[in-house]
Image (cartoon, rainbow, N blue to C red):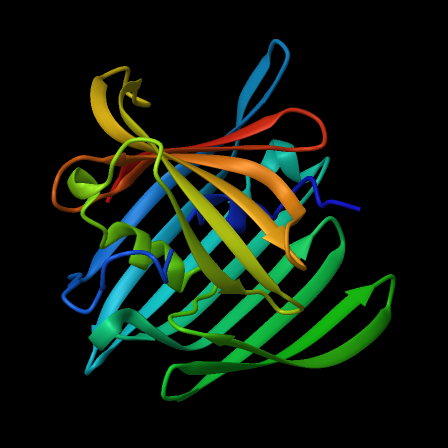
Length: 256
């Protein structure tokens, strides 16, 4: 059955690879990006959570952390406390490790991925721990791919390294992403430049990118997601949107 939702943290991470231009020249400075997560269902449109994405330079690596949490009113219905951590090699934006810890609705899960490289091949050793109603389960998987491969945090920065001005409208590019249990393919469609309204009501132009997730060949593994990215050199995601089983979630950039 297709998953119709991802965690709030992963909704923020819309984020590609083999067919994309090299990211070896990408360079990011220390930064902190803050978002407000809004829930919309019919006439209900209310801020439901906050997310913060930080990047720090550490020698030849980037240390990246994303945290997301629901607001007090939303905690009464569904509590979310998510933290994603990634260590990425600056040269080529190659991920070295990835940890996703999620506390959602009384459930806890922790995925740990460690990468190794041999020429053009990538191996991801994935350990997963899940706890539900006091019961703990553990699993291990060894996933592999050829060419540049990412997780749902490191690929976010690869996305921001792309020169969108050289991408033709409606061109589709593909990427490989490791989760804690499977290899997924992301198809990214460049929808062109659009004018969007920001949280403070300002209207700005942004690149609109749509994502489609599949696994096991062409089996759809998640609902489509959308992001609108600033047209300046920083390529900051200004607005992100995804569907939930009931309603829709939007993430608005509010500064950093």
